[in-house]
Length: 88
Image (tube, rainbow, N blue to C red; front, side, top):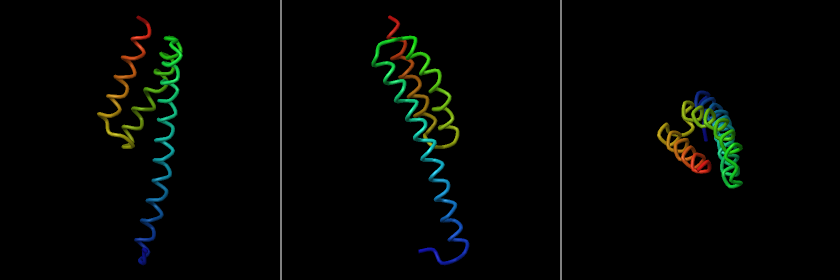
């Protein structure tokens, strides 16, 4: 358990930051789920719109350090390929 004032403050800061990071991660996952559901329906227009809404959220999570930049790029790329395949 933290005893010094600085350690107690550090603990409070960590808890606050963890809450923010959880919210951001959850938001990103929600947008990813919406794209997955749109792809499952098979409607290209809906899936494309969902992807365009999700892409900034994924990139924002990467910029904030919630996920690695390469992971964000990979997810966007793979989703884009799957949405593109619907149009064919």
